[in-house]
Length: 164
Image 1: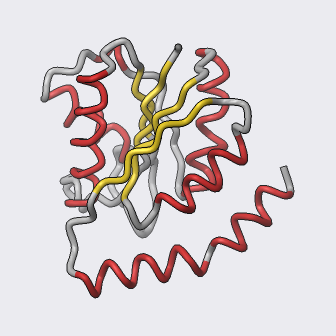
Image 2 (image 1 turned 45 degrees about the horizontal axis):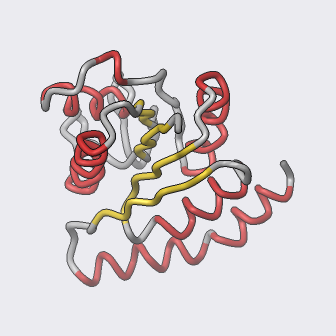
């Protein structure tokens, strides 16, 4: 199998420090890569008002974190300069097709997984998936707010998929 580990973007601060959510996703990707060292890593996240207002793409901060832990730069594909989840998938598509990946390991937070799964499985119906849901390091009330947000946008994502 030709496997790619896709790490979905999440916030960093104005100094480029990864949020706890981003760190949990990167750590899970690192652990997946240790299990599947022949895999490639595809990191998502460019720039956005709500997650990265620096001059460096969010995915490059994640890449630096993973390289600092010993992953070779050659393990990474091009990054997807996405601003939101649907773009994570659509901007990953040409990279996935270029490399001929047939198995995707999708890494995101547990609150985000249902939406990410809907989008990615809809956009890549013929590929094999493995999903990794990281624990979200926030309070229970913050987690419930995140879950409610995700539920509120599912219909929009279904509409987006129907347009493709």
